[in-house]
Structures are given as C-alpha cells and as structure tokens.
Image (cartoon, rainbow, N blue to C red; front, side, top):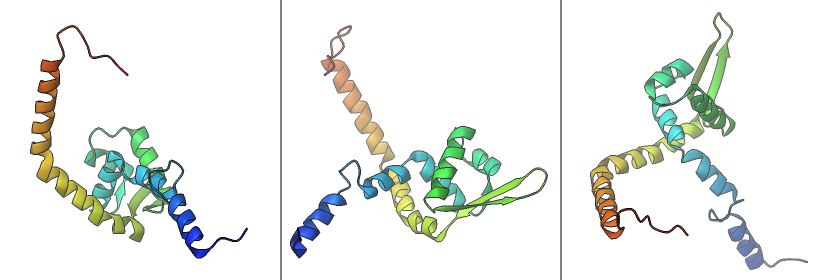
Length: 144
C-alpha cells in the first residue's frame, strides 16, 4: 500500500510523539532530565574533570550513581571519556560539542529553579497545610 504525502506526515507525527512510551524523543528527554545528568553537565561546564573531582563537586552522588550517569552521557555522545594508562589509571571526562549544545537549556532550567524556588516552596507549604486540615487526624485519605 502506498501512502500519500499527508498520510506519511501523520504517521511520522505519531511515531515521534514524546507522549508515547517508545518515542525516541521521549526516551532522550527521560535520559537528560535526570537531576544527576543536570548536575554532572553543570560540573563539566567548568572543564575536564576526573571521577573523584566530580564526586567532590556533586555532594550526595554515590560512586555507583555517578558512574552510571557518566556511562549514559558517554553513550549519548554528550561527554567524552579518556583513559590515560598510568598508576593509578587516570580517567578524564569533558563535554562534547553535543553536550555543550545542551548547556543553554540546563542554564535556563537552573535559572528558572532559582527564580521560582521560594514561590514553589510557599505553594508546597500551603498545599500540605490545606491537605492536613482536610484530612481528619488518624484517618488517612483513601488510596485509589
């Protein structure tokens, strides 16, 4: 069956709908929206770093989480990893051009968070207080 040009466009629109679970764009959005990815990208914006330097720069990142994040970023072509044979072995990480192209978006998200963190915290407090008043003590809300 031959598709018309409009049918081909409709099929392509459906195929690349970030709301769909198997959409490549959705999968990439999920990968780059992790807080660890954001923190690693911001740390590497300052220049090449070793794993130990990144761990110091990103408090709370376990060795396992950091290693997993770095592998994912390398796989996606956002960072480069270079191993220098020495004793001990030296491994450096830095942003690729593709990784650098993502930085403006990350900076915008960081700026938005900084500009809105107080208002969001106030909204959370208000919401939590309203829920606490609406829920009688000892009677948790039913779960659906």
